[in-house]
Image (cartoon, rainbow, N blue to C red; front, top):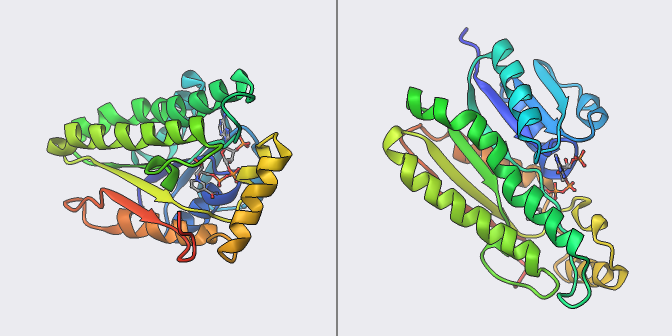
Length: 241
Ligand code: NDP
């Protein structure tokens, strides 16, 4: 039986990224899982899986981990850039450092892995990159200024890269969820904003399960290479915004 190709997932130590890892492993793919915390990725206990601690803003570390995985499992056929942080805050009070970290992780963090795999995908005329954006990459929300900016950037970069590599048979897909049940908001430092976000979530009966987002990623990836699901926007039915 032919071995399935390598899938690289960033942000796999928690939430949506961990759900991607479980789903693509269940579909029989060898995996490289990347995040700063290695233990939660190893705790997933998935077969044919390499777990490496790397900050997605560290291009050398990300590239080295991808090369190590490719030496073991073959070329990367799918890169999922999922690592991200959401630090909500008001424009007049939020710390500059929080803005800076969101831009580094959410924007530069999708570029490190992309640069490590894309030249080879273009050369061999195949491969897929799925970038995780958000409905906050389509609409703006109060307290989300810089977070929305980073996710608008993910949309823009993905669409532009798709356009320029389409002729090489490479697929770029942007997957943009609404509210999902993960620890994402817990890293926000402003308690009142965090409370407001959780109250908003209650009004829609809670967020989606991470497995639902993994279903979407699998649906898009499992299409023939000749078909590119360019964008998926998915949110709880009762999320009006
Ligand atoms: P989680 O907080 O559960 O997961 C975030 C992941 O990103 C963790 O694995 C974390 O790992 C990783 N990460 C954060 N910073 C870095 C870094 N510098 N280097 C490497 N990895 C990093 O949140 P979600 O699962 O919800 O978020 C995943 C993605 O989904 C994000 O891009 C987010 O913006 C997006 N999203 C989430 C939504 C939601 O409602 N939850 C809605 C729309 C989009 P570690 O800390 O170990 O490094």
